Image (cartoon, rainbow, N blue to C red; front, side, top):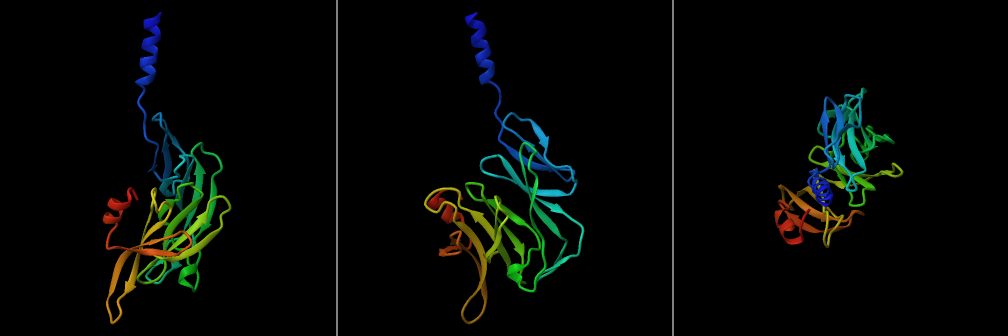
Length: 211
């Protein structure tokens, strides 16, 4: 009997653990849980770009929609929407629709580089805006309030350490006297600048840990 229980215990320990992942199949968001079980979270056939929240309970994603193209400083973009859904398939909800505006900082022409804050409450993204730069926006996933933060072409959230939840943002800037450069800058969530990082984030990551 003791041997039987030992075998059962060993079998339980031997069950493989999987990392939670989200991916796309035929335009639908798929979620694979820690047991390796995969579930389709959406069925529209028009979804892409899924990002899993840090707690593993929510997924943000982009949905294609019909409608007029959105004009930006560099191009016209097909409209999309930003959605979220629980990993148990409940509470699917629309967060933001694309919108046109004469002010580049108010345009929402797409949802690129989705990034959750460490607590999963805030969702950052980059949208096309000016001819030489996108715009970084953030939406509170609990109340759908969205706001513009600052110009940016690339975005990374610092996951841990001294600068946890600060943003590494690539910005297009100009030298005095002519010419331009695209450096990463460390910014706080309220837009306050901490300082320049450089042409890439490798040195920052090596010094301050995982981005």
